[in-house]
Length: 196
Picture 1 (cartoon, helix red, strand yellow):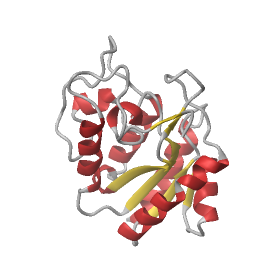
Picture 2: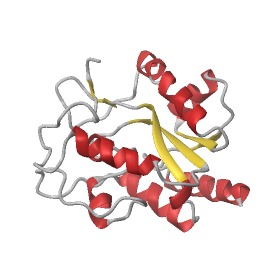
Picture 3: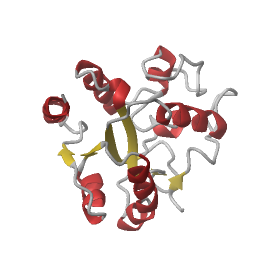
Picture 4: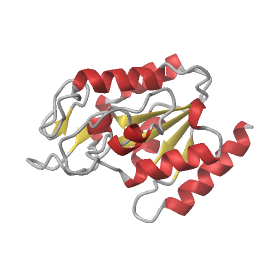
């Protein structure tokens, strides 16, 4: 699709020699293969500082290097950037998942799995279009079939709209970006209480 990047099928210009689609697929498989997944956080779309490099939504290169992601051993540099990519929302998401003892049982995905960006600017994020969100519906259906008993939680309005169009009951969480951290943290804490 024009104006998008497929992290699991295409290389990035700033991938290190150790990174690329195969590494991102391996990360995603390890993330999905963990037993006991009972919560699925659905974001809006893959971001340039996170999933585009790591292969896992809400997960940055810095978090993978630190060994902060359950089921994935610490890894070498994934990009040629001077500093590892570190996505602010990813740090918030994983911090609260650990605080609420949900890190081991949560799977992260996006309503539109690819990375939408401004034309000719791969290091940018843009809101996925309605057509792009529609294109992601088949994967959301497959995810629901794979984890039929997991609680679904939408992170942001676009993901909530996508889940509503599919008729899936879900918790709606404020996205942590643009000043939404306190509401997101409170929403996950409330969700954790319901799951206990």
